[in-house]
Image 1 (spheres, one colour):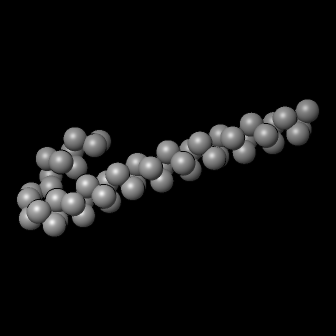
Image 2 (image 1 turned 120 degrees about the vertical axis):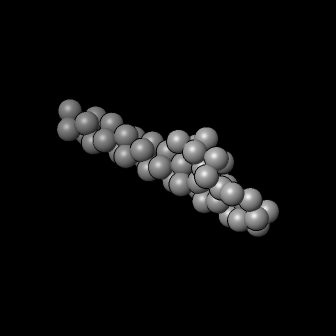
Length: 49
């Protein structure tokens, strides 16, 4: 039984970390892209949240 619990915990942590990394990557990528264009980023970043 503890093995199953451990497996669920690992899956949960993996999914959580993956979602967090993807989210931060999107924010960072958008930020860099609009910095290159020289546009105001507020509207673009707000659309992500």
